[in-house]
Amino acid sequence: MVLDGWTWEDATLRAPIGMVVNWPGMLLVRGEGAPPEEKQKESRDQALRTLRAAFADARAYQAAKRSATGGGSFATDLRWEAMVPVLERKVPLFVVADEILQIEAAVAFAQAESLRLVLVGGYDAPEAATLLARNDVPVIVSAIHRLPRRRGDPYDAAYTVPARLAKAGVRFAIANGSSWNERNLPYAAATAAAYGLSADQALRSITLDAASILGIADRVGSLEPGKDATLFVTTGDPLEQPSEVVRAWIGGRAVDLNDRQKTLNEKYREKYRRLATPAAGASSGAASGGGVGR
Image 1 (tube, one colour):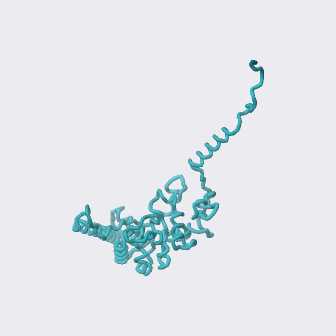
Image 2 (spheres, one colour):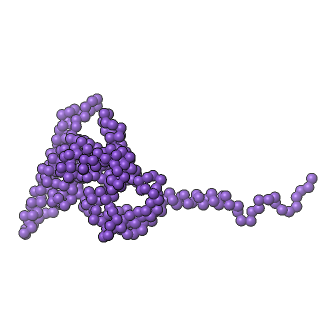
Image 3 (tube, helix red, strand yellow):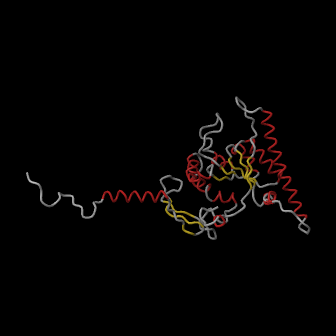
């Protein structure tokens, strides 16, 4: 979506983009308060069975739809209809996975189902870099500013994920964990640049590379003839905190950058400007006229 438009239709850049699956945790949690291992295994296995069954049902629906093309009645089921573009490889399957076992299982599943796969999360993706590069599985690194997931990990494990993926030849983009925090996306890319990623790769990871993974690089992500003219102007390096965005365009339309904070800033600047300016007709000297003598 774009952040400008009177309606959701106006704000939609392209849809659908893909289908999201939260891959079940593959590791068993041990220690005080942890559920019994057998219960964890059953919960994990049931989630995987449900996932496989959903794809089997969607493929059966797809086959039935094709067979009915020549004539006859066919009942549309929106659940499976939404999965047809995924099965036809028109859009990718976005799998949310951080752990190495999740990543390996997701890649195996995508290969078995002949799906286009995009990993989201990817904390352990560098550990599976050879597998990901061989199968051209891109990664959306969903959080740079976070703590290590394991006690034995280096303090900068999350900061160096993009640099390690780039070194291994894995395509990637940088996100920022959640939609409410996307305002800090440039600084996530800047942190990756401070921990081994080149400045050019850091900028591409939140512009052209991100657009390419999402399948919208024909419209946005870079300044080229024929694209949507979605761009902004800053006072300095866009990855540096002191830089300010001074102009922005979406689809060639200038965007109003005013907001409540700017309005309040101007309001109280005016307040103190007036307090610092003597009122009209006021005199700084003693009042004129007769006085009271001693």
